[in-house]
Length: 92
Picture (spheres, one colour):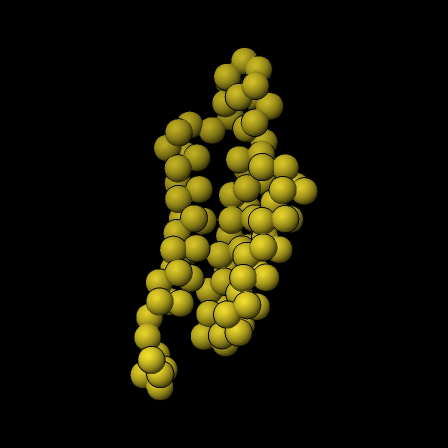
């Protein structure tokens, strides 16, 4: 993912968060998810793209890449689950 695309996706995630009223209970987990993926995992993944387009001699094994990417993506699943969890004082 290019830096420009990463920025666009991050901005869209934050805009969607704003559209649902920026719930305080989700702010921390969303910030952690964005930092975890766009701050670390995406840059590591970006470094592998030139190799994928050339000789295929990656600097990370598939297990190392999985260990880095899956927890970062899990952060967004945590945000989703927290958003879907009904708060005791929620209506509807």
